[in-house]
Image (cartoon, rainbow, N blue to C red; front, side, top):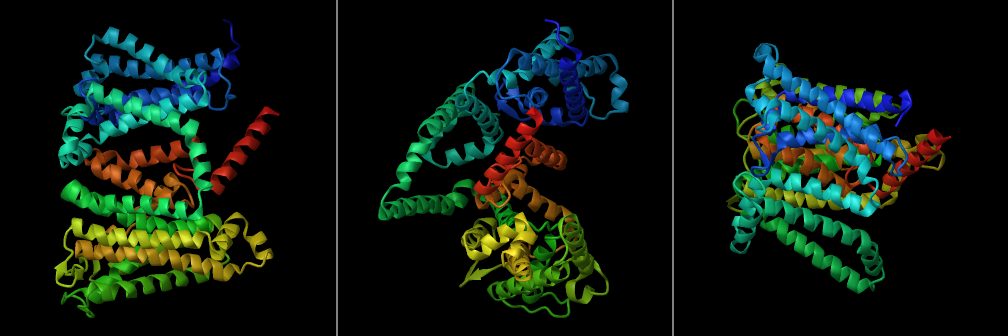
Length: 562
């Protein structure tokens, strides 16, 4: 088939970009490091899965701007993109084999990397197989278009769940083995280092069946639920909420000490995420200095409750006395920040808030304020919370404090979202000038958003200070604000469930996979880029925002077609 040069150019360009990307992650050490974690025991590990994902995404982007209709031309383009990408990795294999001295320049160009890429085969056979796999996996996104949307979505989600369950094998095995009735299920699903073959098939089939059922009957179930009498609907909601609450209350005893610590970390970021979601997601005010309010809440509780003799005003008060004061001072700090930035918008607002966050961190570090904040050494001897005579001294106890805090803050956020104030925030997010013309008081609305968001961060800072019993100003850096903003973007701007999902993905997963901590920021960046390209509305988007982005995509398609 003679195709014009312009037909192959996009595939070749995307293939070169994908090839450079996969060689980059190989020489960075990611493939070798991730190869230590099996997805399906003795079949495939996460390192090789990364290679296949690279080929798949290369093929996807090669046809991303094409029409949704399936065609042989799309399959050819995507396959060529995957083939070119695989050719770069095959070339790297030959270089590693012919030039062992490459390690003098590229530290991670090790024999272990070569062994991982060879799949235990001769290099010639492995290269041919890799090229074939690159073409096949690259063509897969285009080939899936021949299927109806429902089974296509089900297959992709089932594959994603198999990878996720394989990654979380340790957590799931520990959880299952705490319940005698689930021990047999753990033996069936998991091997020593990942999913068993039978377990992978079971997970895949169950997810496919569930997704197909949901696509076919989900709307019917939802319509029937909406038409239930009010009493029955409330009773159903009550049963669901009570069941969820029972599961959440039982988690620390089921998961144990380490996983409870992970849940505490997730809970802290959920609190901060819910606060920043009000400022960024509801009101559309880009705040990059959000960690400042977290620090203010932490230092307020620290000063009021600490028994240290190193600071001038160690209050020695109980945690529950310091907590409301910390919330109030954090809210006041939000007002203080809000007043000078009332006329500032967009990128300029981000720069101002970034400066505010750095000011707070530098003040806490300064020698001038060392008698009050303890300087770089850190504020020590912060007591744990007490309930009566019972000390909440471990993650399994502090989990319940965070659970109550997250439930209260989520409830307040939900009520605010549907209130007059919430609608004013969203109108201001869409267009400040139009909102003001409609009679919305921009000054009061902006200040309230900053104050509410800051108060929620203050709660998180107060609990974190009590949890660690010490506050280090070095930990109150810009990266905390970036992490919170990232989890909102991943979960879905303006979406309350999205904040929880974003915290689980960006905080919970890295904590569970700490052996890959060296690549944490790289994965953050890659995930954010992919989300902006593939699903900019987030994993659990707010309905209005998803609709806006869908309308924008339709307009863009119409413009490109014209």
